[in-house]
Amino acid sequence: MDKILLILKREYISRVKKKSFLLATFLMPILIGGMYALSIYLSVKDSDEEFLIKVIDESGYVADKIEAKGVAKFEVVKGQVDSIKKNVEEGEGFALLYIPKIDLYDAQGIELYTMQTPGMELESDVDDAVENALEATKMDKLGLRQNTLDSIKTRVSINSKSLSGEASTSGSSKVAMAIGTISGLLIYMFILIYGSQVMRAVMQEKTSKIVEILVSSVKPYQLMMGKILGVALVGLTQFALWMILTFAILSIGPMLMDVDPQVAADAASGMSVAGSAGSKAQALEAMDKLNDVLGEINIPLILGAFLYFFLTGYLFNAALFAMVGSAVDSEADTQQFMMPIMMPVIVSMMMLGPVLKDPGGDLAFWLSMIPFSAPIIMMVRIPFDVPTWQLVLSMLLMIVGFMGTTWMAGRVYRIGILMHGAKVNYKVIFKWMMSKD
Image (cartoon, rainbow, N blue to C red):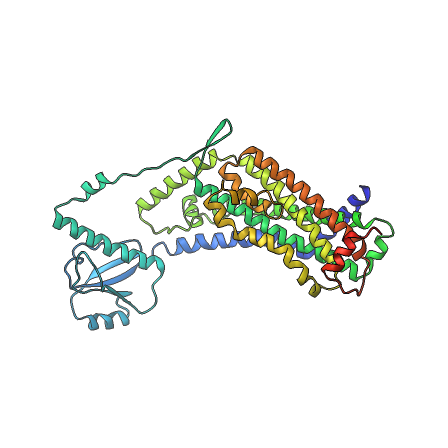
């Protein structure tokens, strides 16, 4: 055990001192914070931007009813379409909205002429403004008032409840889906990035012949475990620093920029600062609901399970990556062996849709029990209140799976790490695995 810790320490210190580690660790939060700051800046900068849309209404349904909407401002004009088009081309307004004689109940043929392709926000605002004008015309013809329709509309917010044993918990499926998907994606990235680092580290020592000196003092199994655990600790350190630095930048950034916290929240959620007061009120209401839902979700359980599957998922796959690194002499030779390791992880990500559709179904259950897919799929299921016995069973099977892959990798590693120039295929690897010498 002392020798494993010694190798772990050497692997950890040598990696965290590298410039590539320091750059990746500190640049990532800065990039995230920079994109966040850019989003806030662009939102504030464009908050007063408006687009003047000239309107020719031959139907008579829209001209008297159309009102400004978001970034779209309207000016009803008279004249020939071609003449107004030329005015727009010369810079008098951003676009021409042409409404021919249309059927009020089947509005077809409305066209928007622009010098440049309009953004999605502007198109949406123009569509909404025309729809509102046509709806107002219909209400006038039917003798209805807007307040009458508003009094008829009914908003219903249904709280979903799930029972787990004796406890009853509630939450939002959308928030649960987001938490589960993000957790699964982070584990997926961690396995691929740091698993491949283990493979390259083993391969570099093998090709440089350093390993021949090392195995004179330590057993190959101890060397392999020290490398796997050392890289895991490097990954955890980097991930923890990313979380701390990102949170610090996102918290302090708006204050340094002297930006209203509400503006920052709007920009972070992708909402337009130029929106109406009503939309902002709805945003605040949505944020309050989100806080209520997050208060009902078992955050400590999710964080604890994430850390557990984060580590066991990496350890399970890192042993296989180390086995491949010990068996080959160059990175080009790894391709044929990487696919069987990568495919289960990739398939797990492809199965997120069916699992999210039915988190308690048979497919989700079995995928969360198989060690190849359990780290990703179980993290997707946990926010949906997985039964305790299923969570415990999945955790135990991950330990069994790690022990199995470690045994396999150790058998191959002890022979492969000292082999040079041998033509390696699956048959040779199986022979090494079964060899007693």
